[in-house]
Amino acid sequence: MRIAIVGAGIAGLVTAAGIQADGHEVAVFERRDEPNPVGAGLTLFNNAFAALDLLGLGDSIRQISRDGIVSGAIAAMRPTRNGPKVSWLLSVPSSATATMRSVHRVALHRELMAQLAPGTVRTGSAALVAADGTPQVTASGRTEQFDLVVVADGLRSRNREILGLDTGLRYAGYTAWRGVTEQPVSFAVQPGEIWGRGQVFGMVPLPDARVYWYATRNTAEGQRVDNEYELVREEFSGWHETVQECIAVTAPDAVMRHDIYDLAKPLTSFVRGRTVLLGDAAHAMTPNLGQGAGQGIEDAATLTCLLRDAGGRMLRDASGEALDAALAKYSQLRQKRTSSVLRRSRSAGLMAQAEHPAAVGFRNALTRLMPPQVMSAMTQRLQQWPKPEL
Ligand SMILES: Cc1cc2nc3c(=O)[nH]c(=O)nc-3n(C[C@H](O)[C@H](O)[C@H](O)COP(=O)(O)OP(=O)(O)OC[C@H]3O[C@@H](n4cnc5c(N)ncnc54)[C@H](O)[C@@H]3O)c2cc1C
Image 1: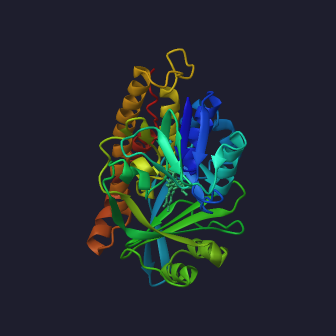
Image 2: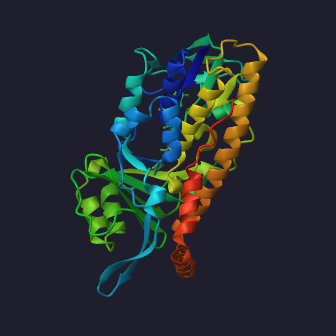
Image 3: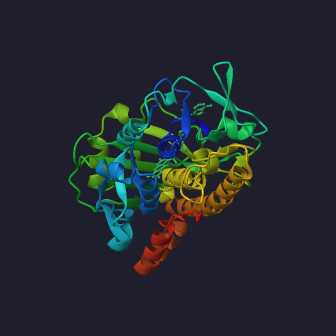
């Protein structure tokens, strides 16, 4: 089949690599002149790697990522007269986090691009789809026909709106800064996530021993200052020395800020005619479970699987019932899985970003009391990709 993919983010590129390897003819439309990943880190769990393995991409991504360093530990930060004190609330047993890996987004993007045949990605091509789901793409004033169109144009997907599938976005109530240190950091606390009042700081060592960090703060939507680096430094100035070291050894112009949004409500369908939604365009979620990209990778593997016949060969009949059935099944499976992760991610965000002293006290007590086995079971369940049965 001839398949168009709109958007060369992680979800679009993994899909392109998967279906191209199966023998389909693929064109990726990317509006930017250069596919331009955010210069930060990413954590990927076992579910993402199960999906990448199915697409034949697992080993190459393992080579550029690092395991055994994401602790799954959560601590609470509280100021005391003798300085900031970090007390451990929870440490997820390593059996549940052993398969988590960290990767630099730029390295991931480069690796995915390298998997594609030359000329697959058409940069500088903002693409719009047909409202009724007819498999066509209009870019640079030209409309091209395909057998299937995959929309992977991200959180603010214009094409989701065009298809009439949009439920709007919800501001989560907090903003996030991200950075990568220029050198390794001497960890005086275990890498993991530290919760304060309406603030979170997370640290993830990368394969080259630099540290990817993220910091959040409850605030009104759309606030910006000239020097975000200074702001994040001030916001976390009373925090643990390792937090301050992470910020200190990051280049000021490498700190990025994004307000956090998710879909106001899960979509009721990921498919219109012969056009399907995938990645953040289909299920943008808050980053609290570190599953946004992972879910996009699961989408890619699910769709690739369903575009195969019972013998595991690619579907060739672009007009028949088999394709309609595959798309309906894709929508059903992925809606079910991603709406549950979206909701859980939102709840995790509410908990981590608690600000009122009573809510913070309650949250810390509750987290401290949670048996590690329960947390472990929840983490492991999240990491199970429901691979489609053909
Ligand atoms: C602070 C933060 C931390 C996160 N941490 C993690 C994590 O640890 N693990 C994890 O799994 N996820 C994480 N995520 C989520 C993850 O970043 C996203 O889920 C993922 O990057 C989405 O990929 P995507 O390909 O769907 O969309 P995008 O990366 O947004 O890509 C969409 C692409 O489409 C292009 N595009 C847009 N419109 C058009 C058009 N009309 N025509 C052509 N091209 C178009 C864009 O230029 C872009 O290249 C985090 C998110 C945030 C905000």
